[in-house]
Length: 173
Figure: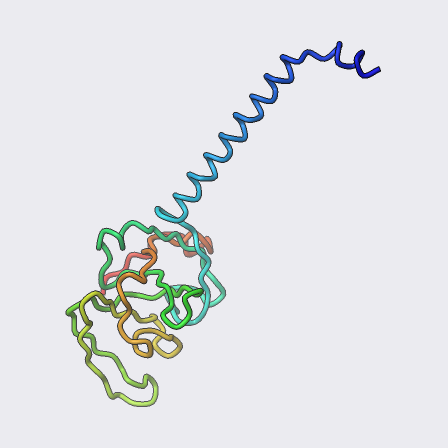
């Protein structure tokens, strides 16, 4: 019975189908590799939420596009919103605005809402000073100190969600 079955099957057809299936699988794997490289090293979407960047970003969440090339080329500066690896928890990323680059003097309120006392610091070499737009509810360089430049993961350049906030996040200080 088995020999009758094999007489009706053309072995060449099976070989061609297997080769075609392998080629399609290889094409899909290549696509996934390109997608990974683009997401990791070029541009990726990210969901951010929380009060620290109010009113620029929504409390309930925004989907932002973050490009990863600018920090590698040294093309971030004061006013840019950046994605940063948290210094106190390496599994966490935070979204803040750069307020100063190495060598800059930054003045900030020591205890916003409690006193008008201000502190001025010089940003050390290889570091940036980041702050949330909502100084009353942001854990940033005021508590963490200057952030090493190498912890900047990307520069936010576009908001894609919610629809009413769609557009560029470019902001000059």
